[in-house]
Image (tube, rainbow, N blue to C red; front, top):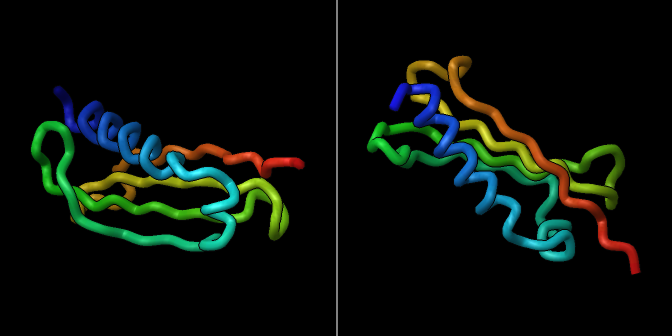
Length: 89
């Protein structure tokens, strides 16, 4: 598996985790972000950066951003973004 494929697989897995909570739970902690160290499926040491941001306005949809990169190559990482829609009652 190539480096880029490995980073992409790790990013896909991380964004699934990042989006596992529903809007009500995430809205209490938005905006928020964190960076932590971990490993890709192939065992490469990488950094995972996860952010929860308001998409357009406070209290609206939440933009989830994930960036997976080797510590020495921040710009060469893989970034994924999803939106969690505000639930309407």
